[in-house]
Image (cartoon, rainbow, N blue to C red):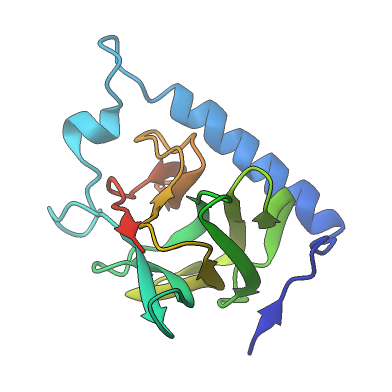
Length: 196
């Protein structure tokens, strides 16, 4: 099922309030997960699955499906190889609005149904494609497509798409969060970028 965004986004009523409360709790908890040397406990010790010694990680990728040399569709995909129980995902993709136009943002996984204000949509002026959603239930799929969008290059020069503001503690604009023993943890590794 496709869920297409209008330019103004959608209102989720009490769901937004719940999402804001959860994200506020995540920020507070993650800020307390820093050791005295400034390195998060997750970075220092790794996040271990309670049933094994396996370190839980996720990756986020930009997958380009080119129509021609100047246009195409980009999918934002989370790779979750250990089937970790993902509660929320945030992905702000940065682009140069003088180099490409971006349109037709489509949310692909409707299980992420709780959105904070200004966490879904395209900001043409500042150059962001924004997704920040939480799910009432854990999502354990090994591959999760968060969103897709169309692009068209305005010239012949290469341009870069990057994930904006990744932070190990999860308090940036790009994160994949699970609950580990009821404690929110960002399991997203440093994301890569692509050149169009």
